[in-house]
Length: 185
Image (cartoon, rainbow, N blue to C red; front, side, top):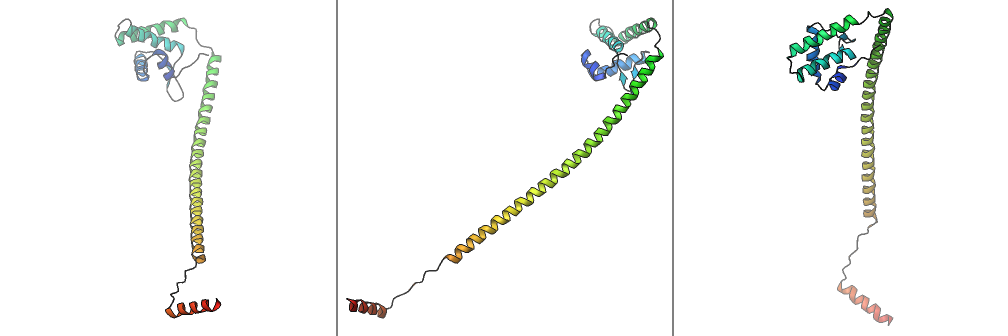
């Protein structure tokens, strides 16, 4: 079984853009060239197809052929190659069917994985929101506790502080104190 290539791989290997490859492929198909199609109806490129498109690109770039003439050249080479090739065996067809079935299974599995990943992303986002809310709640509680402790500390300092008592001595108390001091001496 021949190796099949994606259009992006073929475009890169030929040094052309994906849109240019599509244009050339469409022109070849309109001229009677046959491309195999994949499950999603995209073109499947085999080595013979790459050679045909390569021949088309070279004819346009190196030989300055018109696109129409280069397409006719590539189509004529394909019809000559098909005449030389023997008919494909039924064993190859069943092998291709098996491969297509396997590709379908892999695509289904891939789709399932994509859906599971989407669900995991949703759950992760929910978990992150929950964690953010939890952290904000804890920080709010810490700030409230800190504020309470600060207020309690300030209130205790206010209780401990004694107000000074100011006494104004009267003239009589001054004389009385001097008299007491004199009698002690």
